[in-house]
Amino acid sequence: MTDLAPHELRVLVAVEEEGTFTSAATRLGTTQSAVSHAVRGCERKLGAVLFERGRHGARPTEAGARAVGYARRVLRLLATMGAEVRGAGADGPLTGTLRIVAFRSVAAHLLPPVLARLAERHPGLGTRVRIVREIGRGTAGEVADGRADLGLATLPAEGPPPVPGLVTARLYEEAYALAHPQGHPDPRRLPLVDWDENCGSYTRRWWREQDWIPPATVDVEDDAVAVSMVAQGLGMAIMPATALLGAPPGLAVTPLDPNPPTRLVGYVTTPELAPTPAVRALIRELRDLPLPEGLAPARTQPARPGATR
Image (tube, rainbow, N blue to C red; front, side):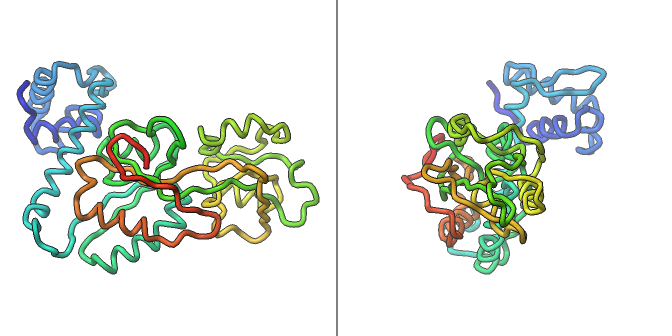
C-alpha cells in the first residue's frame, strides 16, 4: 500500500465534515474534480470504499469513518511536530492550543482550577474546551476521532475501555447520592427526575436491585437541569457527587448507604499525543488537583495504551 500524503488526509477530513465533494473543494480552495480524484486515490491505496456518494452528498462508510479519524490524528501530530522538534532537549515555554473535551459537570467544577494553574505555568499555551455528552462513544470517541487531544471521561470499573486503542487513566471515584428537596419527610417516595447520561454500566446493576426507584416522570438532557428541578420540589434524583457540586439552595443530599453505586472518572488521550509536553503538562495538573469532598482518588497503575488505570 502506498502511504497517503498530507493533502489526501486533508481532503478526507474536509469531505467528511462538509458532507459534499463540492463544499470540501470550496473549503480547500480547489476543484470538485480534484477532490473526487483524491478520494478515489485514497480508496485505491487503502483498499476500501470510504464514502457513499449519492443525492444526499458524501457520507463516510464504516471504513471511511475510521480513516477520517486516523487522518485527523495524523494531521494533528504533523501540526505539533515543528514545535516539538524545535523544543527537543530544551525546557522552553509551551505554545499552541490544547483541545479538551469533557462532560458538563467535570467541565464546570473541576476543569477551571486545572486550566488556571496550567495558564499560570504556561502562559503561551492556550486551551479550547468543548462539552460532550457521555452517551455512546462520548468524550473518548471525540479523542479517538482526532477532534480532541484529551478527554475527561467516565471509565468502566472492569472490562475494556470505552473506546479501544486509547491511553486511559483513572483520576477519581465518586459515589452517587439521593438528591431531594430540603425538609421532605420521605424523599424516596417522590417522583424521579432523571437525565439522559445517568445509569451507565457502573450503576445499572445497582439500579436494577432497587425496588423503591420509580420510573422517571421527568427526563432531561442535562444533570444541572435535573438538580435545579429537584431543588424546586419537583422530585428526587440519584446523582453522582460531581453533579452535586455547587448545588442550588433548597437541595438536600442523603447518602445511599450502605453500598452506593460509584463511577470512575479519568482522562483519555491517544498514544501518539500522550508523551507530548503540552498533554503531559495538562495531565500533571489534573493529577495534582485537590479533590472536593465526595471525590476520592482512584487506585492507579502505570497508564498504557488500551487499558484503564
